[in-house]
Image (cartoon, rainbow, N blue to C red; front, side, top):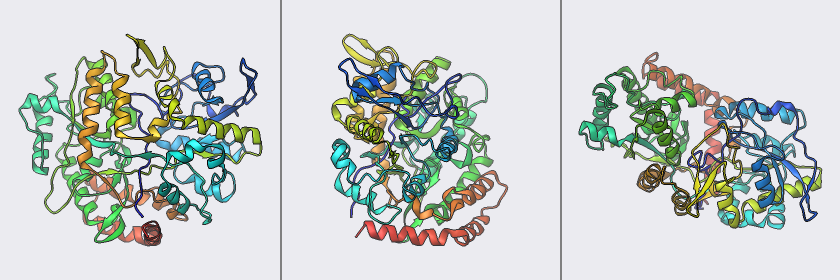
Length: 526
């Protein structure tokens, strides 16, 4: 069966949305459950408050009576409380979520992480949505094609073919390597098309002072801790990699975990050479998100990998920090003889939402009402724009997004256009809300979004449930992979140690996980 469309969390991008909450001094998730008392509208309708958790990259929380709370109440008919829970790559979020669950204070609606929805479904902690969605949230039900719901049912950890989560959906590739076009132009270099050309560009970025400050402070390329967000360096070897996580694709005719393939071995050998030559940031394996973003936004990094939609924030912050109006282009996947490269496209993202199996029927119905109104297309642009004066302003009769400001902007936790996105709709949103001040950045972003499609490939493991890792948490958490990959890149292990990693991976559960993955693949592709 051919899967259709999928997941994504569109944009920590122009919008500063679908991601977050919180800044210093705001209420912490550990301060107890939100006030869920009811309000009344002027028309007398009861407004039920529900607690919603999602990703967080530093914005203010949505608190009872706040401006974004009032917008959600007006547009969606439900009060939304979104406490500050730092995302931090998902680690802190998951820890805090587990604490809330253990304290019997599970949020009413939340984004699950790392397969937690499987254990919650098995224990009955989250709602069976199979009958609830068509009846009480028909807009959600209609938002996804039937074959997507069939995959969600096939992923039911209870084996009963039930729906326990709402998927995300995106019908375009949203990731690519981004390279400083203005640096290439200044140095008189063409866009690299082969690996050899790419290496020569990195050397020029390292040695020829493209940022023009007279210092040898340029970082040709790099990434973040746990060998993540360097997908462009693996992509040229045909390694299925998603945000730095090895993934599943067809190798030698069979569904296989990319981390244990000869493609990965070749890629790690290449990365080790780059590291040795000083062509990768020496702190790549230590960089937090903030630290790596800070380097990019200080006019020091020539090439990075991320969401293309995130580009306007990078550009605007770089300009604010340095006065430089940088230009980034999509890096074509460099050609390597013997390999077919690509940037990974996953139409299915990790599950987007799960609903608490609430014994309080009023709260359960309010949660379903929220979902139904969230997925009503007439609300999408309002949810994208946010609060006037906080997230956008009106100029010449046009709504224009304001610059990203975590100190003043509440977390736009509900942005349906990001979770059921199309290229045309997303592009229209960016272009229709651009201001005269940031149009230069938005134009780059929309151009690059279109350009990247020719390098995107949907991988065979798209939509695979986390349940294939049940009983093997170290395989799921990539523990062994991270250990060997980082030591090989740093030169602490010779590349010959890769074969030892593969043997251990299979021995420690990889063989069983592979059997489960291939069984799943056969089931959904009948």
